[in-house]
Image 1 (cartoon, rainbow, N blue to C red):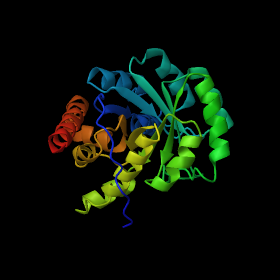
Image 2 (image 1 turned 90 degrees about the horizontal axis):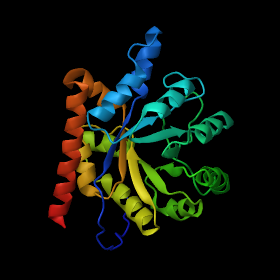
Image 3 (image 1 turned 135 degrees about the horizontal axis):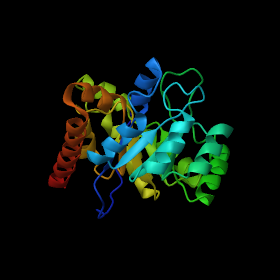
Image 4 (image 1 turned 90 degrees about the vertical axis):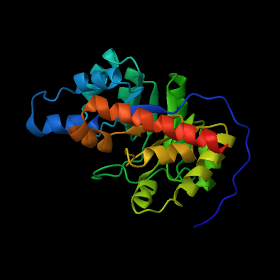
Amino acid sequence: MRKFAVIPHKAKSRMKTKLSVNINKIATLRNARGGNEPNVIEAALNCEKFGAQGITVHPRPDERHIRYQDVYELKEVLTTEFNIEGKPIDEFMKMVLEVKPTQVTLVPDAENAITSNAGWDTEKHQDYLTEIITELKRNKIRTSIFLDPRPELIESVAATGTDRIELYTESFATHYAQGDKTEVEMYKATALFAQEAGLEVNAGHDLSLDNIQYLISEIPFLAEVSIGHALISEALYLGLENTIQRYLRKIELGYKNAKNEQ
């Protein structure tokens, strides 16, 4: 694996990593039967009540899980941070500019992809992303770019004017499940380059109760983790409140482990 030098940086006073719960899978279950059970709005409010510091949704053009109408209804009731992920097609942009969530995470969704499977090539799409991000920030919406762990892209990322990146963590999760902890080094390098460029760093995709503590201990300055599939799946066995509380404890332990190593 290619090695990157870690850039020394001064420790900063920061809040601990926020947990944003992606409720797409709740909507998938609802849509499988029709009707309104389970209730997406009620589930989101329960996530907030049980300790989640944010709610994430990722509406797609075919509305196979979260529907555009869900987004408008959620905006009316949520009291924590609201993060909307998606590809900035015209319909998506119209919606987010009307809803004005806390954050929009730009994802280069491929057509017919089951789930997100790649980050942006920000060198190739720098002008396009800059135009989109300028419009979002004009509307006072925080922006984040979904990104593979590639430190060499950070210069072009910063040039877009984005506030944050979201590290696409599937590769980390896959290697970690196989007992390989070295993959996190590329994520650390990318996160540090981003921090030095003045960007905040989020992370998401395939994070779970098994790997979240280790990721936080290695990158304790993550601003937010967005977790959906694993969290909702684990909640089937553990209960939603218990699962969210377990994630919050894992994040706390990861943060403490990192502090102890400094």
